[in-house]
Length: 495
Image (cartoon, rainbow, N blue to C red; front, side, top):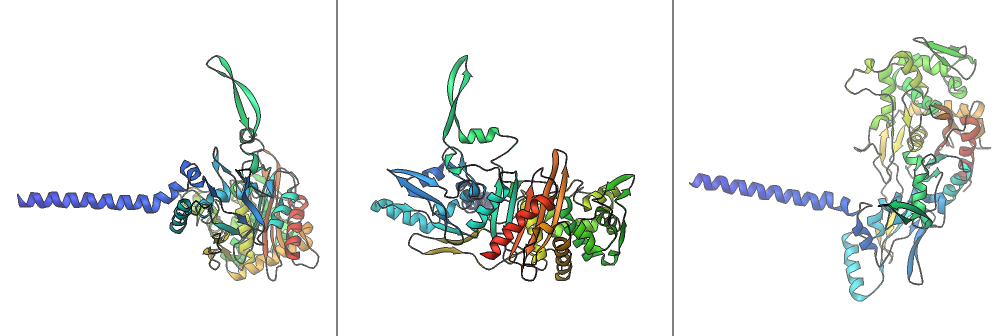
């Protein structure tokens, strides 16, 4: 009898312990995530009667703030479409997106101290305020990036390679975040055999533009074939794994692999590594990749973050902002040598095949080369402060996201990329008096004209900015994307 009582007691204690752990997990881990979910209606309730925190850029320029006019509160975005994808929007009807969503807990002061202060303010009948946040973003560069895209579909990302700070992130087409809920027209809809009026909002209209996809943040979530900018990664693989392969190659305008003819941009003759990078020789990198091997190429891609290395379970870079990394042709469960055939390996080495990347990912690649091989963890949040000036959060020192390549390899890549700008396809990215390194790309895609790419950084001797530019269906990267990068670099260094 006593043994049965003991067993029952142990069972009940075990159940109680499991319940305590589960409830603790819900409150500590799941609870905060659910509370700050952009679709949680309690956020709207928490925001009612509160002045949401102001968002500032790195020079304390207002990027978003609440304004009250005649008792009506409105969220205002002074830079409009230029910061729409970066900041997102706040809507009781459509939730919240972008950094407005990411930093909701700060902007609504949802920490313990903020909740206590909100209770005190409510009892005393005082206005409640969220916390203000300061971003790493440079509003002048952000607006310049949007202007340079000139209404063309594409994206721009600029990072500080030394720290990982996001300086600018622009996507186009864009939208006006202040008018998301505005009714733009009324449609007649058949409901149960009767015509009914249905209001159509600006958000509804944006969703209907499937081809333009103005709500898509192309800078962070857009996925594109990289084209020749991927040769930076192929070059890194050669320098890291088999530097002995860096012999000259003879380019006759094309190369044939397993019966597949891979055309080149021209007849380049006898080329070495730096020249191949400068003139973007497909033959050189395709033939080198065959000797390099699939495993070494994928290893280099993984070191830069492709194939979800260093990402969360959703394939997003861990950090302030949800960013899609990218992927290289990959066959889980197979030996490295059984994945690609020779033709696909050659195509992958020049950025075609099944390789896909995001602009943000490629900005990190450029930043890694610029920073001696170390990619710093990207971030946007610098500080969080209360209305009375109390510091709630301050960004600690820079954090290494990945050690992609050795300093020696980074130096050799930087030298080759500088030659690309000095005398190669990236000439239109050159800035007088500044040493610029870069790589162009013209990526073929099955849905239209080639995408124009450019990645690079400057100054080469002490890099302060790394950029990635993609312009959809625009042709050559040297003619279209490189000038955009040039103006961004010029403006930032001038500032």
